[in-house]
Image (cartoon, rainbow, N blue to C red; front, side):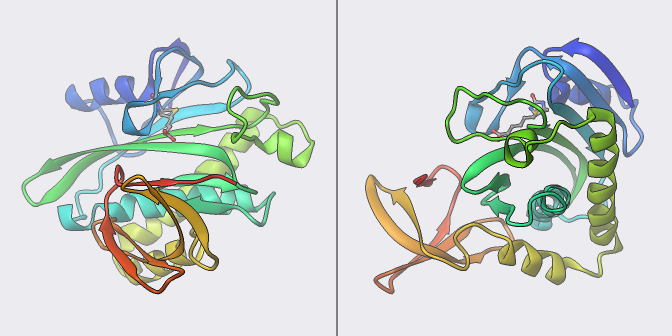
Length: 241
Ligand code: BTN
């Protein structure tokens, strides 16, 4: 574990370690104060210093074919979800891999893979979990403290979270539970069991998730019965309510 009181981005530090070939699987870069946190789709990840868990795990999933790489996202999201659900049972995964509670985001995940031949070589799993922070610029963000009205010891929560992620990663590494992991992901997905709103090609629709492909593409069944299949990350925007 590499602890940095402050740094630009733990994912960037982890990438430097990977490029230098200095890592062993499970190396973690963790900081109290991330100055240039990166989010999905080129966004910024901002978190109050010292109040949250901000870290990156370096994995070496060389057992996983490129075609199956979305399983990493699903596995990590499920591990984090099960940790958050130990406090807040209604926690869901929002496709592709946000963790949300009562419609509000509690954790963001940024996964950056490198490949070698037909398989993955390394995977940098960046996690920003809102723990003790109580106020957010974004009204659709929340934290463990906001939801439970308790204060948490960050090091204790890190250990618990790491155990949940580890248990799920070991299931993936066994290569015997791909189907179970995919099914569990679907069953815990926002919009799988009930209709939700989203925008697609500048129109607003209501419908529910009908499938997530091996490659991580999303299919939705509209409330009118029609299906929109194989959507990529940038093609659909969930409408928060
Ligand atoms: C998102 O939801 O947009 C993903 C956010 C990921 C944030 C984490 S914080 C630790 C790691 N380092 C980064 O620069 N980003 C990830």
